[in-house]
Every structure is written in C-alpha cells, then in structure tokens.
Length: 493
Ligand code: SAM
Ligand code: SF4
Ligand code: F3S
Image (cartoon, rainbow, N blue to C red; front, side):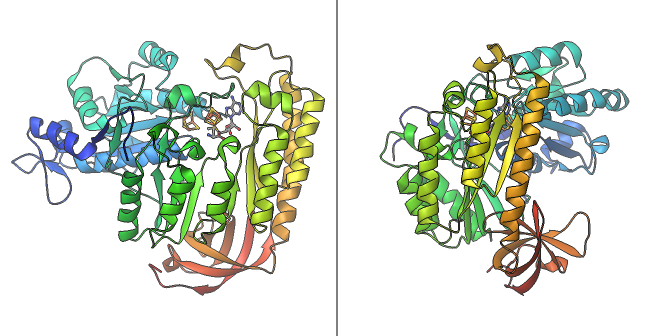
C-alpha cells in the first residue's frame, strides 16, 4: 500500500536516535537510562523518583493523545504523580471545542500559578487543541509566564526533546507546528482502559463544518496505512485487549488520502477478521461518508458492535447547509432507514446543536421532529457557541442566548423521555456486557457496558473487572440500566 504525500516515520527509531545523542539507551525495563543507570527523567529533574501527570479535557482523540504522552513519560522514567501538587512535570492536554473545556483548562493554568511559585523547579506544560491556536499561545505568553512549555497537537511525539528544552531554556519553550509533516508510527501509550484500547486510524478533519474548530486544531486528514493499523491491533490482541475503538474525527473518510482503493469498510472488515477481538467500535462517524458497504460489513461481522453514533447536528435542511454538513435531512433519514432495516437491534446515538446563527423556531421544530422520528437511544446536545476563527463565528447571530437555552431545554426534555423509554424496553432482556470495575459511588456495585455502549450497574466483586458476561436487565433510568450478572466468563475470554 503506497502512501501518496505524507512520509511515515518511526517513533522508536527517531526517539532512540535523539536519546543516543543525549547519552541514553533503552534499558531492559523500557526506560531510557545513561551509562550510570540514571533515567532521562532523573537527569532532567535531578530527583531520585521524579513523577509526572497528564490532565486531559475534550474528546476521545485527546484521551488517546493523553495516553501517548503518559507512555512517553513512562519511557523517560517518570512515575505517576498522585496529584498535580506532587508532580515534577504536569501537562494540561486541552480542548478548544464545544462546552466549557477551554475555560476549565485556562482556569487550571491560573490556579497552578501559586504552585509554580512554591515549586519553581516543576515543569508546567500546556498542550492539545487550545495550545494549537495562536491566540492561546499569545495569551499564555503575555499572561501566564509560569507556564514553561507550550506545544500543539502535531508534535506530541517530540515530548522527550520538548522536556529537555523546557529544562534548559530560561524563557518559555514554545513549539507549535502549523501542520503535521509526517505520520508517526509505533507511538508508545500507557493504556488505562483495562481490556479496552483506542487505535487512531485517521488524524485531522477535512469537512470544515462552519461552527467547528477541529480542522484548525487537528489539521488536514491523514490516514494511517492499513498495515500499520492492523499490526497495532494484532499486537493489542496478543497482549489481551478484547475491545478496540477505531478513532478519528471522521472515521468514514478513512483511506481517501491514501491513493489506494481501500476505505473504512475494508479496514473494518480486515480488523474484524484478524481474530481475537470480541468487540470492535469506531468513532466518530460522518453521515455523509457512511456508505451502504460499511453498513453491510458491520451487519455481517458479529464482533463489530451494532452501535451507530451518527451526529446529525440539525433536522433543518437550510441549517445543515449553513453548517456545511454535506447531506440533507432526507439523505440522513435514508441512512437511518438502511441501518434499521439491516440491523433492527442496533442502537443509534447522535450529536445535536441548537441555536445555530439564524436558526428559527421552524428550523428548531424540524430538529425536534427528526429526533421524534429517529428515536435515538441517546444524544449529546450542545447550545451553539462561536469558536474564534470559524466561519460561523463571523456571522450575524440574531438568536438570543436565552432562546438558545430554552430550545436546548426543550430538546433535552424530548430526548430524555425517548432515552428512558428505550431503556425501559430493555428491562427483562439479557445483554452481553463487559465489566469495567467498581462504580465510583459504591464499591459493591460494578459498572458494565453493553454492546450498544449502554451503562449497566450490577452488584458484584471487583475481580469481575475486564471480563465479559451476561446481565439480566432489571430496571431502567434515563442514562443507566440496572441488572444482575447471570454469568461471567473467565478472564481473557
Ligand atoms: N468529529 C465529530 C463529528 O463530526 O461529529 C465530533 C466533532 S466535535 C468535537 C463534537 C460535537 O461538538 C459536534 O458533533 C457538535 O455537535 C459539537 N460542536 C462542535 N462545535 C460546536 C460549537 N461551536 N458550538 C456548539 N457545539 C459544537
Ligand atoms: Fe468538526 Fe465537522 Fe470535522 Fe466533525 S466533521 S470534526 S464537526 S469539522
Ligand atoms: Fe476538543 Fe480537540 Fe477533541 S477541540 S473535542 S480535544 S479534537
């Protein structure tokens, strides 16, 4: 499989070369050490047991990046800090997307100012989508000199180099790349999901929805080569992972940039037929690129979960046009019909934005109508908020904030009722589940997920974590099912 434009590099080869130039080599314990046995982290920090932590805001892509940052920190010799107050390195992996994630992250930067005055030797880094934006860099430069290191989404694989610089340089170390010049393979990751793992298949997004900051913060679409993805998945299976989620801002456009006749349906099929994976998920889908061939591959492979997250955003054709979504309401509903026909038991979820600039009460009524028609199992609903640098942020927005809020309330009320009803239909059924672990609220209760990614609370012991089983659903709430574990498989099944 030939890639057309973007070169592919090996993280291991490049990092080993950099470390060798600094006098470090990879030890048997997977940590870079100098000839005296001191880890890279010990040398940088001057401490016997340096620790680090990564805080993550935003979507699964950012979570996956957080695991890659953790993986690199581990290879440098950093332990895991119990709290930011104790960390020698603290990285804030930020989000510039919907909601208040950006405000929270910047609030955390402000909160850490005091800590940095007490512990000036600690390295505070800001990375992720927010750091990719020039206005954030400017803000941090002017107003947050206590931040030592700023880097973006395209150079997370350079962390050993960046931390070295942050320790050496007196001034703030700023290294934000405007684009990703290469695709980096064999990235390390400290995975935190038990037997579940994420696998990036495509970076960036070319859809340019008019409200969305992601194409700015994540760059153009770059697909990984199928062979590299399949090798990573195979390695995960060998290490005992049983559920994987293929990740991308738009997984359905996978392969378009590879210049080969190989698309997301082909990749899904090949991953499903690798063997050893119990559940395969993928996120996020774009309805415009979701082909009948993909629905067919999903329907004909039992280890691909029959959960479709299909962000629709609006039920009004003119709002969809303004959003640059590339499909009409009728085309979207046609896709839903195909899915329901081929996989009647499938669960459907979505993302919706209310209060888009110039959205009228009639437009909003069409969204409500579509939600009634599709009967989603769940929906992530957002009140439109302008993101600097996006086209929609420059448009006149006559919809008052109070009206947006009121519409969001009405939409949520409708969706909550539908979610609850759909959950109630499951009472009395038996569901295949993967047990995650003790519930944060009650250690005697376990959280588990169904194939459709529904949360089920079941009484049970902690040793069930990471095991598949069958649960009988006994009660339903809007977002949660309650049940009893009827059987539990051996670990690794
Ligand atoms: N790539 C995914 C997609 O296309 O659906 C996810 C993109 S975004 C990180 C997640 C959701 O945030 C979007 O589906 C959209 O509903 C919402 N969103 C994005 N920008 C927004 C904005 N400016 N205001 C409100 N909601 C927004
Ligand atoms: Fe944003 Fe649209 Fe791309 Fe999703 S498809 S990441 S909403 S530009
Ligand atoms: Fe946020 Fe970046 Fe994801 S903007 S939603 S973390 S891609």
